[in-house]
Length: 215
Image 1 (cartoon, rainbow, N blue to C red):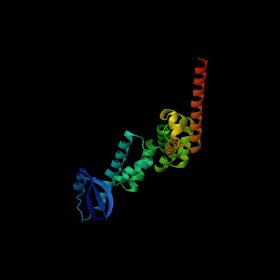
Image 2: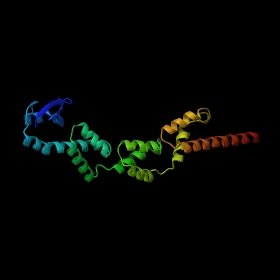
Image 3: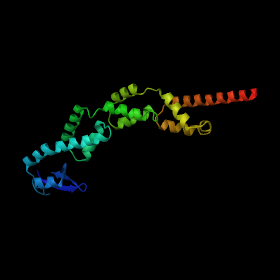
Image 4: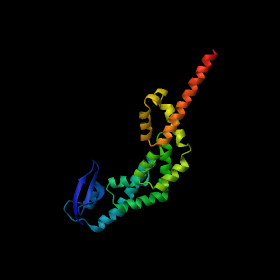
């Protein structure tokens, strides 16, 4: 194997290229220890021992540290490790270890994501965003069914009541509908919710008028 390049990533790290392929993210101390020089052969035994002794452990530590700050799905961990130039064997091994420790659980991640977003986004957008994380549709469907305590119509009603006035619903109805639809809410339920709230406003006005007539 030949070291074809040692390319700086940042102030501390370099990307080691062996036989023209990214091999790993390494530090200056690693370069000195392994006596790495671009254009020269690398000792096969030494690089394999380095891989087993350091790279697997570093990948696991990097992944665990990222999980400390917020829950991550499998896709997030794989992407992070790829961005750090770890190869697929190391990534697969790291992911399996994290799963066995319970640190990665796509169902748990999906449930948490849904809880965080269910009061401001509709099912369609949530499904789309979780699909972008490569979480299986069966997992997403189960998480949605078990996590969404409110019917989507109730959520739409709450959003409209908080965000819009009567004049918004009458004079800017199409704009309101476009906004709610962009958040992933069902078109039919948006229409029904707007109609419900307009009827409520009308009933309130009628009640106020009756009270004024009695006075």
